[in-house]
Image (cartoon, rainbow, N blue to C red):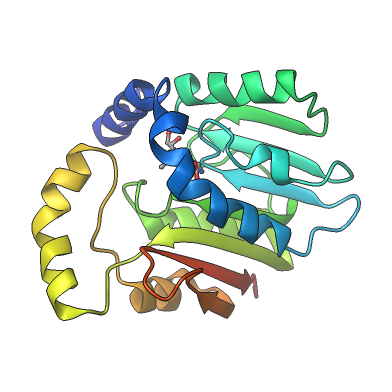
Length: 209
Ligand SMILES: C[S@@+](CC[C@H](N)C(=O)[O-])C[C@H]1O[C@@H](n2cnc3c(N)ncnc32)[C@H](O)[C@@H]1O
């Protein structure tokens, strides 16, 4: 059986981004990725999963004494991540192609899961989160960096209006943070933005099973 059409189209969009992704997005995404990983409580020997690792903007931030696995749907994006692993000799990191909504890992495989700019990219964020909770150990840490719908009514209307365009270019702009937290089943311990007016939230959560 082939890949569902929606996944094929996401794969195509990100293959198109792969050569220009860092130049386009690094300046916006990297500061929050760096911040979130710095404040993750990664311990020596921890097994860490990076879901939708993309071109690997996060990879240089993981301490060398843990083991990291990055997965992504797009082999073109992964090629860029592999280049970074090779050139920075990140021997504690492996990346592989996999659908995050149907992971092939066993239950309770990871101590920590990092998910940046992915929950509004996959077709079903709740299917994604149920897989994340399955492969993360009980009491493990799940850290999410993502844009969520604004609580400002005017911005919310604009985000709703531009959602069809956003979907064409690879993400949705209308995911509600509170609904996401309630339905994902995570115990969110901290949620904040790096600046007062920012587009992206950072969530630190515990995987209670
Ligand atoms: C906006 S990029 C984020 C990449 C990286 N995490 C970052 O913050 O720069 C979204 C990534 O999610 C990947 N992706 C989309 N759907 C996926 C799925 N079902 N399974 C795994 N990866 C997926 C895309 O291929 C893309 O690399």
